[in-house]
Length: 94
Image 1 (spheres, rainbow, N blue to C red):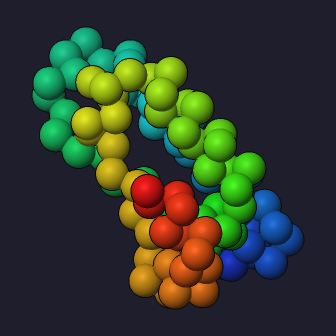
Image 2 (cartoon, one colour):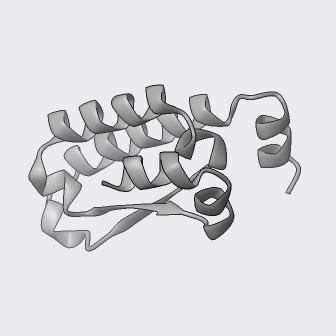
């Protein structure tokens, strides 16, 4: 309960989200049977939703990962993050 609020307060949430996305892609790619996984949900911080550099990083990472991996990843954006960063959230979702 204290970790994520501290990460956001010290503006580290986007770096953590980059790490989580990288590790998630890596874990899926390393699975012996990728079909055994239906969906892996990744909750993104509001800071990442509002950070266009994160958008570019995520798109590049997912493009490189390929469609088999991407079909299994669900990026979750909270309503609060979407409303707070409405324009950036819309761009990222698109």
